[in-house]
Length: 412
Image (cartoon, rainbow, N blue to C red; front, side, top):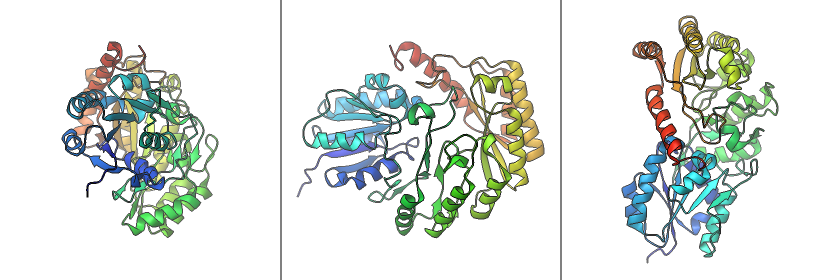
């Protein structure tokens, strides 16, 4: 007998592999997987194979660098599946630039956290009463994200566990406080523990976390570590059956001004990671100040020393090409990077700035990288002292500038 339920297809990519499990977990807890045939598609061709004109909703979750690829896929789907297929978008690009995202060809754009707005939309679709407005916005801090499981049991799709949303800081290049707000919301252990137990039963054994700053878990104010709460998290992960716990490393990082020997020893006691990912961003205090970063280069250096002393390898983020960056700023960064490599055995994770919608720097251009800086980064890369996608990001930065100036993204 043919299944008459409408299709709900999510475009699955490398970029949204941490987003989709939580969204699917929300759908499953709300019982909407009983009302829809929920499918994942790894390619445009797979969407076309699975989709049916007139009874299909196709969802995209993506970031700004994927804009052109998404635009091309949306245009192709429109031709193949017809105008009755509903195309929807969410994620960082949709939240930062809902109007520009809608112009890519989407029927509905979800701006903000969608744990409340998306289930409501799906129920409206079932009842044949779609929203009148194409942009569906959620208020910051309105999400029920701590309640829903951070995984899909139906699709056996697990990801690192998001434990914190929001950021107490307001770095001018970062979308996080614009998407999630400037207060912290944490997934409480009385909710997470049974979720973890169920995940472990289904084979989830290796536990890692998503957070703008892993060491801020449980905190409510700047720089106030809640050591007891972090320890409780790690203990209960063990008690739930997680065999290998990673904390303070990818896909999270930690801020230099939150690193203490006490929290590092806690990680050494309960976790298996050998590295701590540190967001230094620059070795120039004047540049850090202009970024509104909220810490100094000296704090980054001290944090690296503590990480090394605690027996971890520091994996330190630096970004080049910020608006207003000078050669002196770059020399200070390179000097600090070299010191971290030689004295603390650090590995550098290099980035190149690109402008993101809704950030204070969106309408500013990257500062072009000079050959001397590039050659130094390439040399460290060759010697395996540095990694990262900084070369690709340099190209992407100027593509985003072009899209912005053409009116493809951003307000017209």
